[in-house]
Image (cartoon, rainbow over all chains, first blue to last red; front, side):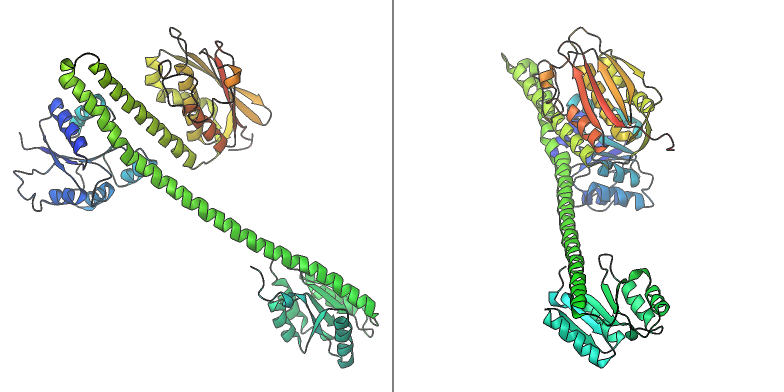
Amino acid sequence: MNGAAVLLVEDDPSDVFFMRRAWQQAGHAASLVAVGDGEQAVAYLSGKAPYSDRSQYPFPTLVLLDLKIPLLPGLDVLRWIRENPGLRDLPVAVLTSSEEPADVARARELGVSDYIVKPTGYAELAIVVKRLGSMF
Amino acid sequence: MIGPEPELQERILVLAPRGRDRLLLADALRKAGCRPEVLESLPGLLAELGRGAGVLLFEEEAIDAKTAPALLEALSRQPPWSDVPVIILTAPSRLERQTRRLVLSLGRSANVVLLERPIRILTLVQTAQSALRARRRQYEVRDFQGTLEARVAERTAQLEASMKEMDTFSYTIAHDLRAPLRHLARYSEALDVDCGGDLRGDCAEYLREIRSGAQRMDALVQDILRYSRLTRAEVSLGPVDVGAVASGLLGDLEPELRDRKARVTIDAAPARVLADPFLLSQALVNLVSNSIKFVSPGTTPSVRIRTEDRGPWTRIWVEDNGIGIAPRHHSRVFEIFERLHGPEAYGGTGIGLAIVRRVVERQRGRVGLESEEGKGSRFWIELPRAGAGTP
């Protein structure tokens, strides 16, 4: 591990499982760290407990953000990131099953770097994950 | 809103400065079953008018140059449904031009009838009753408008509530319903990859069925969401160049066209229709992708998009060399979830043509087709031609 990390904000364990599987298969050098809700995502990014040890929880070079997550919705996490001076330039890709124009439009307004609709099949997911390599 | 005291609306408000006439007038009207109410001054009468009145009855002497503006003002403040009848009993001593000046000074906002004095009781009563009848109609219009507005407001609220519910519904489907399907598809795929070789007999086939079932259902869910989005999408109509929209959609369909080695030609005369560019392109995308899908095995799909002027309409044809549709099925093809083939022969969810019809109707257009089995299909969309002078 070279210390680089990508933060996955995803509450669905199966989605996390397949993400890890595709991540490994893609052979990305960065590690994939997963948190399960919006508040954890904020705590992780601010380096607050229990994520204060940056050697264990490195600051990410990319955030993969599900929209419908517990405690703090994905779009609120995105807004918080964009309003936070230290994080403003952090690439954030939304990874969601929603193609609703309202979700897409709001994510764009809030300055999302990429909006990815979760593919149904694993093979398609593997392709998406491989491509993510260009973002970090 | 219905007036709290309907009897107020039947009143004849009387202003008669000459004491004897006042009593005679009121008495005669009362005897005829009317409800006269004698007032002492114009301001008093105008205050009563605000509470509701059937008719205003004046002696000419009751109004002069000083008081006329107040009356004019009150009459011109009436709501649109109201045009209260004003009966003026002319003064025999006044010259006609004086009376004319008075009538003119009340302007267009007054609905004035002049009765010459001396007047017969019958004439007065009959005129008053006729005016009351007309006035009753005005109140009916007011009440009808009130209930109509209330009803429209109620319906609008109901509609908004169900739209909102639809939004929530779609949101839940989009976010939650697709997750289990995704997992079904992916786990069966993973099982196949990791342990496919260990499966006995037909088990590998069962696994593929699970996967394709989940994928079919996910496609269905996506199509339902697409249909619902297009149903709710805002429509903004303007002049649209058909050829440009048609060329644009070829880009969107590129992978599909390449997969099926399909050929699409656009033969649109410079035609501009009144449409929403996004919805029009959605309609054409669905028609073209339908056309290239339903072809006999071994046939290279060939589609032609052309326009035809039909008076105030422009018809956009999408013609193909596909398997065609027997005329007895023509009425069904635009219905949602209608499919003419099993999934073995031609996949699909039965939503494509329903989307076409829905989005075309939302643009105030029409759809149809001409086809026979084995002879290709000619689908059409008709939209209003954009006026020559429209920018």
